[in-house]
Image 1 (spheres, rainbow over the protein chains, first blue to last red):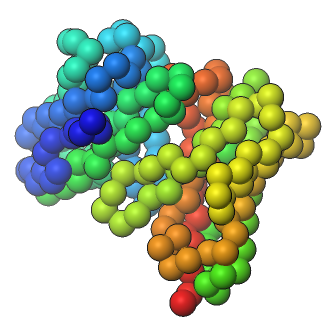
Image 2: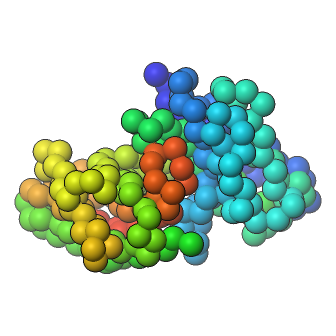
Length: 112
Length: 114
């Protein structure tokens, strides 16, 4: 298995632009999570899905952030408009009850 | 909500020595406690986990202990090697299980000196 696949690996964008991060979970994993990692705040859960349905989005910082999971093999996290304080590494993870979380390699976002 | 505290924030040991990292949690309903290792430029990787129906679990040089009464759990690495150098995170699941959200500790930077 190729693991959890995230794209792009790096993204540099200007303030105000729309940013879309993509995630392909491991086949057969029914839960998907989006986390953000910064030095100041550590690993923060943004949103998670079970069987493609959003369960908890209380960690989404503002209305500028949105996430979708149109099918079991794809999810997106969108930031519109982006701001410099959104700069962070964004991780996607997928899991089953038996396997525990598997994280992707992350997307390093820089908003200038 | 759940709160996870992790200590120490940095730990330096000599190769071959043991390393211990400790975490406490606040929600007594939490019943799943994984540990992750994160190397530079990579995502966290699950190294061991424990559920609340057991008090200890071992996997080669790594062990985790859980004290539900005191609400704390610890990671023990024996015979440390330079390749163990990384950031280690503990986590707790406030609703239980690996398909629910995890609350992470703040991480411990482990440096193993050759």
